[in-house]
Image (cartoon, rainbow, N blue to C red; front, side):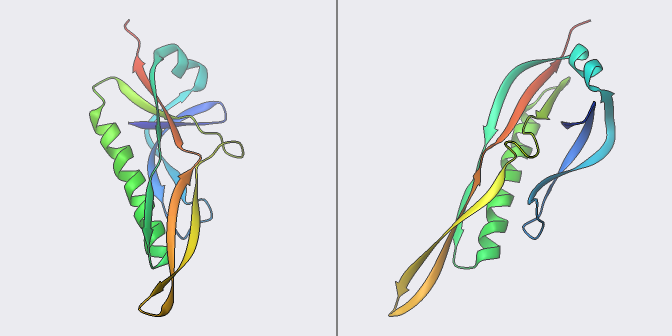
Length: 137
């Protein structure tokens, strides 16, 4: 399960990565878990941290951006699948401070005597996730 802090509440979320949105790397709230932040920290302890990033390139700008978002989502889902019972991933990036964003670099290449654009997309800063385990009672 993936959770994120919203003010004084920690809520379950699901990835909502969209290359057409202003915030390409987004999360949509779900109703699977909702706790006050203090209660979440009392019930769970941080045992590990991960930083996820991705890179993709291509000749079509939007397709390359979609590919980098799909790669990041696949890494996130793989990490979530590794977790055992009683573990959650907490998104630790803060909006307005260090929130992950897609970044692009454009190069002009000469292909068969014609100028062509080539796009490289990356995620910067990385998506920071804390691995939390439910405390033993």
